[in-house]
Length: 371
Ligand code: SAH
Ligand code: SF4
Image 1 (cartoon, rainbow, N blue to C red):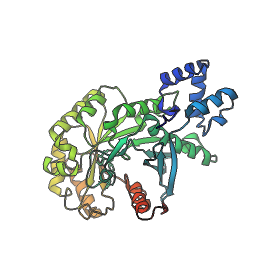
Image 2: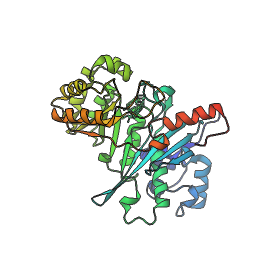
Image 3: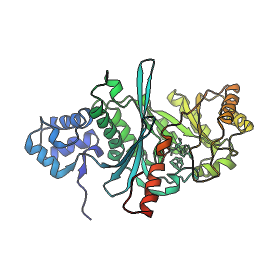
Image 4: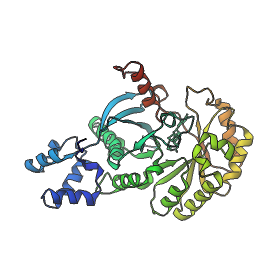
């Protein structure tokens, strides 16, 4: 098999400088190239007008500018955009873009991105978990999901009043895969998205969501990053969590919550807990009290997520009244708690759902990937 040429977004600043030196170019070209990739959001080497033509030619021959190509895109009634990307080896991942209308004058555009093809954790309620694990994404494959949408906004947003209305304001690592199981690539991507030489996105505007890989949480707490951490809790007793989030058998709740407490202390940040509500499984008032007992004294926020529609009848969303009652009980127990707004319901908004549906369709009718 021929080796794919190196992809520019897979390289950190030092690696990029080394590449430029190997090509026999002056060192400042690395900075120029980075500027075109991350600030000017160039879609091709041809656009890089202040780079000499022979250098651009060398770049075309020896490198790739990006590592993903759009395979399918669908926009929902609420403005949510779901994109499916093809990677160099033909595998696919998805990202979800969610614009929020300006509240008190400020727009927010959140992008939810993937870190793995499939996921090794295998939660039974999750479309990605049911696809099995294929491989980790490279740093460039993670970064390029953000660059794709940043470029898309730039191209379409010429009429926007200010830059903020016209750029990605938040990135959440909550798409396909378990981010902390791809730790090094995740950190490299975060560094480049955060760096002033990269996209310059504030670390506080990024959130890593984890199913609870304790060693990863411990490692992250030593990084001195300002990135937010969200932990997918979904159950407050080990018996149920073993079923819903199978990694719990390896890192049970006692170890997980201890790691979360240590994380809050070390980083002096508030942690978020995600709790998907499944009717009849984890949505009783007694279970709300049990969540409150588990999290007592932790500086945290609980995000309740009514379950997405799922083919599996075991995983249904409770009624809005039951969701409100669960939230009210947590609040009575002094737990800061909100209910996540549902987005992109008409376009397979949940993690891995679009890919799952397109794969099923492709399996039935190989030529069709249309909705
Ligand atoms: N693997 C990491 C990262 C994100 S995947 C983790 O588990 O934390 C997890 C996210 O996908 C959840 O927080 C949830 O928002 C969403 N998700 C997956 N299946 C879902 C379902 N059936 N209903 C609602 N949300 C779901
Ligand atoms: Fe993996 Fe998260 Fe889905 Fe569980 S919910 S299978 S950890 S992507």
